[in-house]
Every structure is written in structure tokens, then in C-alpha cells.
Length: 91
Image (cartoon, one colour):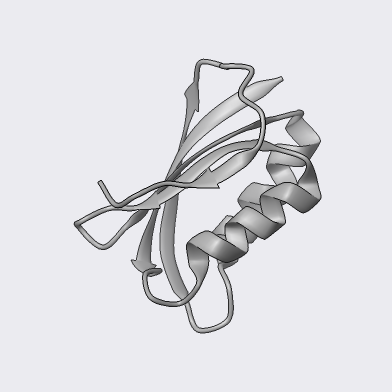
């Protein structure tokens, strides 16, 4: 298992990014969370097998229709064994 912290910048708020990511995460079988940031970015932590993470990260780099992802910064994070994927309040 591996966990990553991701910050996505661009036009990614108000376009269904977080809720679509929750669906993508469930389909891929990963755990974690996603939330909007007050600076206009979206922040997430995603945990799963490397192939599962690759699938989710590829989607995050594109986003849902109506979004425009400028960049996605990915850094390693400590695994937590978390289950499920949730949308958290804005931070």
C-alpha cells in the first residue's frame, strides 16, 4: 500500500471535482479524502495499491468536464490504513 498527498490547481472548484473524485476513488478501490482549499485549489490524500493510485492520479490530472487542471503536485505520505473515501469541509 502507498499513500500520496495531492494538490490540484486550476479551475477545479465549482465543477464537481470533489464529488466526481469520490466516485472515481470508490470505483478504483482506494481510501482517503478530498477537500477544497480557500486558495482555490483542491487537496486530497489517496491510499491504495500502486496501480489503483495511478488510475486515480491520472483522472485527477484531467478532472471532470468543465474543469481546467493547471497542475497536480503529488508527494508521498504515511499510510494510515484508512477505509472509505470522504469529501471533507473546506480548509
